Length: 318
Image (cartoon, rainbow, N blue to C red; front, side, top):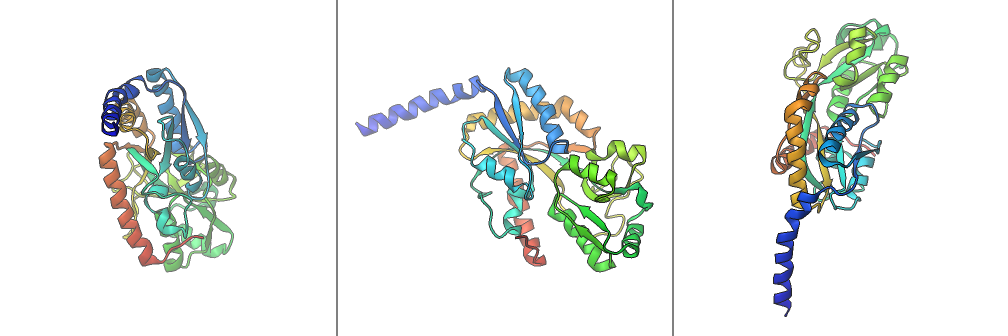
C-alpha cells in the first residue's frame, strides 16, 4: 500500500510541477534587495521589475534590506518561504566570501540559497569630491598625509577595501574606512564632503563625473570604461593585488522548485540579453547572465579564491 501511495505521489508531482511553473506567478512576487535605494542593484531590480510585471501580470515588490555587508538582506532571503514568491538580489559578498570574513553568519551560503543567474558585473570606480582638488591616486595619498586623520572613505566590498588599506600601509596614506550604507547614501556623502572618497559602482557617479562635482581616479576593469576613457585602470597604475569583479546575483531561498527557478532564469536572462542589456552598458554595467548550474560553479570558484585570500591576509570582521 505504501509503495502504491509513493508511486501516486511521484506521478502527481511529475504532472503538477510543470503546471506550477507555467501558471507562475499567481500573485505579487517580493524581491529582497540587499543594497540601499538608489544603488546600482536597486535601480536594476526596479527596471527589471517593470518588465517582469508586463510579462507576468503581477508586480515585483521591492524590499530593501540593507546593512552588515549585505548579510541582513541575505538572512532575510534565507529565512523566506521557498515557494517562488521571494527573489533575492545581492552582491557577491554574502554568497561568496562573507563566510570567511565574519566569525559567524546567521545563514549558510552553501545551503540556504538557490542560484538563478548572475545578473551583471559592475565597473567599480575610485572617486573623490572634486573640492579635494586631486586628479590622481598619488595626489590623493599626498593630500591624506597633509590632512592627517580628516579624510574618510567607503567601499561596498572586501576587494576594494583591501586596495585602499594596502595603499594606506604601503604609501603611508592617512584615511579612515567607514561602513558602506548603499549607493544613494554614499553618493550624497561624497557630494557633501562628509565622506569624500569612495570606491564603488560607476553607475552611481556618471552624472556627477560629467558635471565635474566628482573626480574619477581609477576603475577596476581589465580595460578602461568606454564611458570615461580618461580614467585609468588600477593595473595601469601598477596595482597587482587581488581584485574580483563585483557582480550582482539573483538567488531564491533554498528549496524553491526547480521548474520555477528555470522559468525565472528564462524570463530574466532573455530580457537582460535584449533591451535591458543595452541600457546596462550605457550605465557602466556589464551584462553577464548564466544558467543556474553555471552560476553555482562561479560562486564555488569565487568562494574558494576568497577563502584562500582571506586566510593569507588574516582579514577578519567581528
